[in-house]
Image (cartoon, rainbow, N blue to C red; front, side):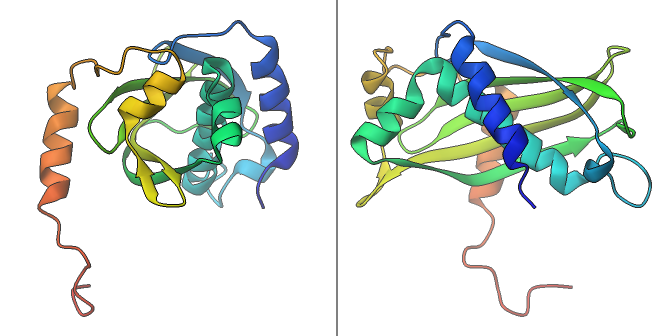
Length: 181
């Protein structure tokens, strides 16, 4: 079940925080609750992705993107992701999430997020390829940047992110129906 109480709390908190530029880093504090865990008593990977949704929602609020989306009747979609889980987050453990928009190209916006344990270790890191959409399809990120009074010129894409994009472009689409091994 989607954590609606957490979602509502995140939106309210973000609206009370100072505005931030599109490429600034948003930092939020979280706790792993019993309903977030799997059978190994740690943060479930699916719930981690849902919590990352909340981080992106807070970015949207703090950058002023949310009112732009509603005004223009745009939506947001995740169109790709790459995630690394490296350290366990256990029940009741507190952690910090860092979320930032890294760059964009002609179609997509790239967002980086990470969860950090209190001892300073990174527990997980994810890169999302996202898109703003309207009734005609993808809204160019430069148009989105202009709507936010941001320079539409994208920041340089890090090499590791470029390599992911290039590797993902070689992946067959649609996948072969019998391609699963």
